[in-house]
Image (cartoon, rainbow, N blue to C red):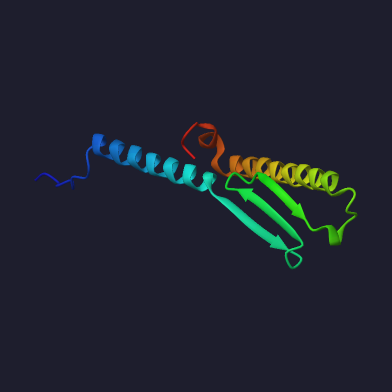
Length: 111
């Protein structure tokens, strides 16, 4: 008597499904990276514009909370510091994910 093995999707079908999922994920990622967000703090005294790539696009600081003669320098310093912090968070996250995914995490397009 032969054992019946249930038939699943063919290898080609599974590859098509995986490719479709990857394309959908890439499209969603591009959409998220293109978004811009406006955030305010201190009752609107500080306004930050950031994009989905976690890049600070601008910072607006109300003169009432700082020396009005040096707002531009303060803004530049804040932008540089925040961007550097974001880079550090991203590199740390990448390193930690590599520990979890092992060699698979280094395969382009897999994760």
